[in-house]
Amino acid sequence: MKNEVALDYLLEGFIDDALVEQCRNITVNALVQDNRKAASGNLFIAHQGFNTHGLLYAQDAVAKGVSVVLWDGDLDNRDEILDSISNKVLCIQCPDLKHKVGEIASRYYEQPSLSLNVIGVTGTDGKTSIAHFLAQCLDAYDVHCGILGTLGNGFINDLHPTGLTTVDALLVHKTLSDIKHAGAKHAVMEVSSHGIDQGRVSGVAFTTAVFSNLGVDHLDYHGTLDNYAAAKKRLFYTPGLSSAVINLDDAFGRELAKEVREHVCVWGYSLEKNISAYKDCADYFVNATAIKPFERGCHLVVSTPKGDSCFDIPLLGQFNASNALAVLSALLVSHVSFENAINSLSTIHPVDGRVEIIAEENKPVVVVDYAHTEQGLAAVCESMREHFSGDLWCVFGCGGDRDRSKRPLMAKVAEKYADKIIVTTDNPRHEDPQSIINEVLSGFSSLENVEAVLDRRQAIDIAITNAQPGDVVLLAGKGHETSQIVGDVHIAFDDRRVAREFLSARAPNDGSKGVLA
Image (cartoon, rainbow, N blue to C red):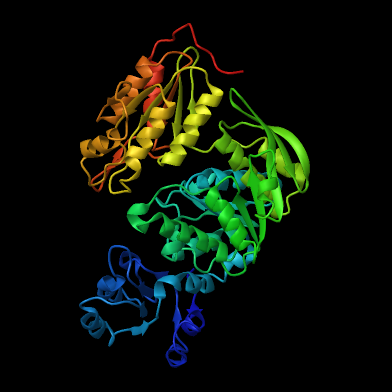
């Protein structure tokens, strides 16, 4: 059953009072931005998007029965479009509409975020892992925790894929409403820089904001690293935010912590044993006083304001140890007891496509990871060195229509850590795959241990076939993804499925080099 909501209530404070009067006694039964989903009685929202303007689709939405068109922005034939529909439906201009859609949606869905402990997670790397680990832990010791992010929206064991890290503002608030009505107390949301910049999280009452790190990414969209960082920072100025959990091992994180400490309580987390240098950055500290890697995880000794403890996490790499500290901090901020927080952390399980291990006896170990930035690739390569003693094979590529500056930088990272490197295709989109590979190859100082293989399936086959037992084959860049994007076409391709196929086809081989104890 559709929810009928008074239009004046939805728009009061966002448009002139005189226009609000025109909205009296009018109700709408849904909010839509996609004309293909428009129906009778809807409010159609039309503003300038990244690629096109919503007003271009208003006539079709009106033909499908929408009651009101709410619009903003300029385009060449704006007046012509408005003249053609204003005698059929109420058309209202709303200044800065893009950043008000979320607040309008929040009102429509009865402000669901106010009834939830909403934790927003941002940063270049680690958002998905931190969000999913948090949801796992909160689910373990409390009423359900909802999640919105790269792998889908919903609940940890019932996710609905969306294709975006942060969906549009209407779906954000609808999902939060669904989560609330399902009985959840918490919601964890991955918050991308695009999502912040485009107003997709406006109107969300975040309780806590988590920052993982800042690396070079999305400069194709933001233009400069400063713009990218500024977008991330805006999450920490959300009205009503009470706490911030910030990685103090990150230079930008330390700057951010000092700045936002003026208006929120800051919990800083660090892998450093001695955190005296960070004393001005946070009100409370969570740090690891010892980290010891073992074959399938890490042993951590931690110090927190709520007590000290030692425990194991079934995750590889210091970056995952850092993610665990972020989760521990957010749990304590969310009033989970110290004992329950530690117990739940020790039983978390890896996230799909994030350092996901595929292994068979007497064969090389395959690790699939989403690392697609210089910083992310360095972190996962370092973790392979910490946990395994054999050679490291690195298979990676770079996506098309994305920041080109990171391509040679990722080559330098692979060259620093890997013994054997295969550069291949990722998601070329509208770029020539060979041209992308050539830009990556330009970053190597020597091509002695580097091979370029255009076909990703063939590249994976070569690595798994030639690696020895005890070696590690890292398939980086695509992680959980189940397709390759070529032009506008999504072609079925899953690194994990392909790796299992070639690993199973390979005959066992004795003489394993073994792993670190």
